[in-house]
Image 1: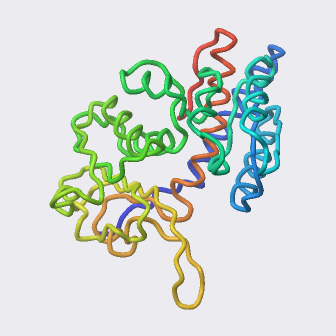
Image 2 (image 1 turned 135 degrees about the vertical axis):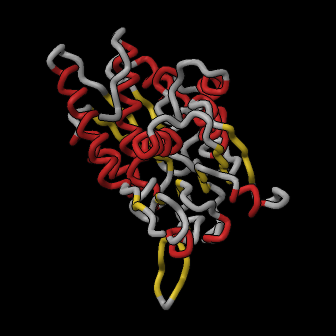
Image 3 (image 1 turned 45 degrees about the horizontal axis):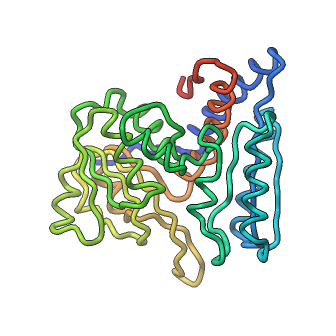
Length: 294
């Protein structure tokens, strides 16, 4: 068996195009969605990520603001900035880039963001709304995974889904989204007994554990759809490579469809950040949520 490659670059391009169309429709009403990103410190990976977010935000026709603060910034100063952004009607989405410096309480900062502007979907209110099946802001990476699964499989109801990983950012919200699609969901992790057998039961296998190539092909049910969220840097053959949590080569011989790393889930994260900003803007103006999948 040869797997179908789920091309996250191509799919995210379609999502960004629909976001841009939605933004253009709002512009005709005199409404411009706005995203503010806050970066504290000089982490190189975060700086690149924030820069890419700004580029894609502007390409979609949105207003973009980047607030870069020194690493020694006090928490009170950061919270004051968040409060200012909360009160600014031109700002529909607020994202504080993680990780924050060690002297800051990340949970306190995240929970200071207006939940309606929490485009990362990390605020405790949004977590609770998602967990109880109510309208919320949904974390970007799990949302991107769900959009690709819907596009690939259509109706997900009744399918067995296994999520390997229990983080608040991916694993737990991914499980909640799959429950919302009427899947039978198992959350597994590195300490799960008989993990290989659990994985082999999955029609949908989502790997989000942060261990390079942890899941080999013989853990994959023939014909399953595999979503690999992992992005791990390894040294191999004298060079640095990005690999996922799934051993791609062996899994691709078994799975029905699989996301590559890089080029799978990764591009969907920023696309869904833009989508969440558009959604937040629509809700702020009493308009229906946008359609994200054509």
